[in-house]
Image (cartoon, rainbow, N blue to C red; front, side):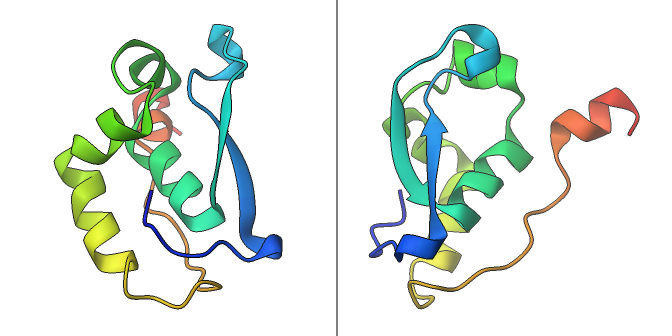
Length: 91
């Protein structure tokens, strides 16, 4: 997603359609990128509209994140912002 090399200790498998929605296919992402996806989108949004890396990266919030993280070193890690999903659940 961010086009950086993924160190082995920073690799996460992202289900393009969440497992909770029946997804099986995965892609490998940096942990920080994976966390950011799940902080921006709910599982329902991922299943319906954002089931490819291409559609995920088209989202303005993701583009802003990718622009920011692209120049970080491969092993960079930081906390993702609060999840929209958590916000909607009332935490």
